[in-house]
Length: 115
Image (cartoon, rainbow, N blue to C red; front, side):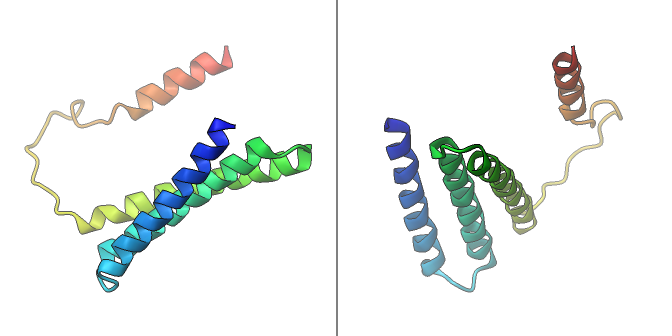
């Protein structure tokens, strides 16, 4: 019950925050991307809430798939916001030092999950 109330409170506060930022300057592209990010995160939270609150298997399956769609939209909006922030010049690093640690993490995670 507390988790349901917390999810609904999070949705309401996120909606108010998104509207406040968007109304402060509608023409600013950062605010537009932010409101899209907030709405996609709200959709993600709402679909996750509905997946846990559903009773039949069809509804659970539907809301679980929509949860993945909301998460994907949030990631796309977040990566789209990168173009509005200046990029600092980074010094040249060794080729192994410039590789992100994500491939190692995911390879270890999938290896552990498959065993």
